[in-house]
Length: 305
Image (cartoon, rainbow, N blue to C red; front, side, top):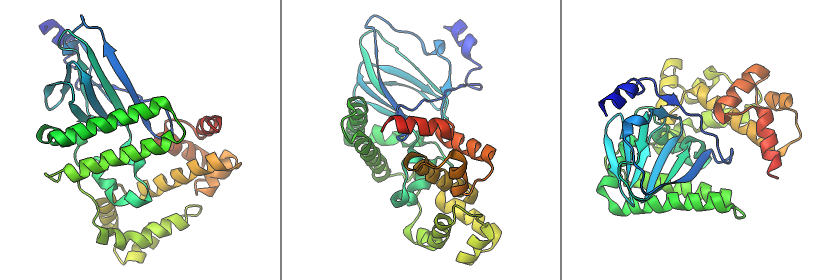
């Protein structure tokens, strides 16, 4: 075992960056079930560390799964749930003989924040701490753990049955999971924008929405809320969880996704419609958000019609 550890001891500092391929690019998730042979087991040191920008939920159905994160090593049992935060190094293994069955659910939670849930963008953006911090909820509250396990199982069922409206069902379940975490967070590990702060920023958010096709000036946004430039950029990031520029780009890419799905505009025309006339920049931003080019996105979406 010592030799095995020596082989992999440096992988914690250089974990594999796993590129998650979404099963449905509109839902920004991948979910699957793993089953292993009853007579098989191995040691965790045989598995390299890896990470990905998506949050990962593990839901154990049968058997035991050993999971190592930078904070701890833990063996999960049937009914257990674990959260692994965005870009957090981790590795897992089967520590004992016997049947092992569990669900792996990887999802970009921030992409499931919409206009109605903007106040909670910061809570799930992991800018200050990873969502790993929420695992205390499952350790302390068996009822919440059971509900989270059930919701993850429901996402798995919907994603594989693909019945009519399954996208709506999955989006609804993910929001229920986020709500469960938010309301069960008795230690206030999550933080969300208070309504009065959001109300103060509303003129700025409206200004962005109304001017996506044009140049958007941060100075104009400052004047709308009567704040100095330096105070505004700090205040906006504290309230929204992302910088002013990141939020503008996020809104532009979301609008471009809609146009690519619902209009006959060319990709160049879509770029102009969302205020990004530089095609190299448009492709770069789009790929950062969707892991594919606008052309690939349009082809995927049209093929689902």
